[in-house]
Image (cartoon, rainbow, N blue to C red; front, top):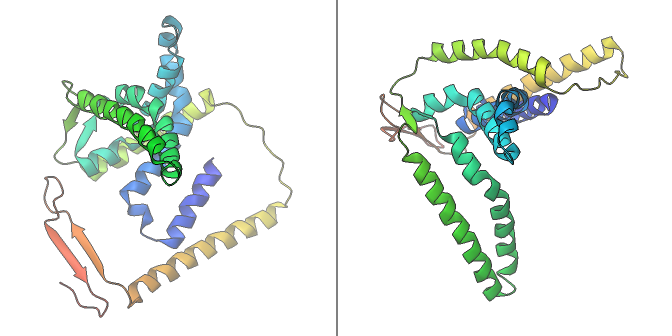
Length: 249
């Protein structure tokens, strides 16, 4: 999983050098790492509750996954959305089990709608009932007292301190609670593997630089950038337009 994540990040940054600064990429990448590394740790913490409550394994697992993902992405969420949620575990327990069913209903709806409309309407009504439930559950959780806390400003130094303190916890949780994996003996010599690693690294760096330069000198595109100004929520207070003939507005 770690090799796959690292390879994905390298490939995406080679295609788009600015992907690492995209909020969606940061949340997805850190959230996945958090789920993989910290879920066993939170499952261990919640195990006493699971032993005392019958049929609580699945809700406890959902809570552990949610806490793991939120722990890994908390500073990014607070920095970009100026809010910290305290009801996400409860909301996920109420809604996540239905997401797979909704995906299946959506696929069926798209497939059946061109063949038999009455059946497609029936599937659509079922999906609508589930969506109404999801909307009501999320709204109810959002209106709970203390559901979230607004944050006006967040110092970037606090973010680095948070992750610096989180790293030892992640290392401890990975060694203590993650299942052991069988190591596969390498088939290449150490020198050959080192040459391949350096070659791939140089290739990725070169590719990223070429793509960055190409994006700067590409005369076929016009870009519109919405800039967030001030401590309040983003409202597009400033808009920068770069035309294909290198003019700015």
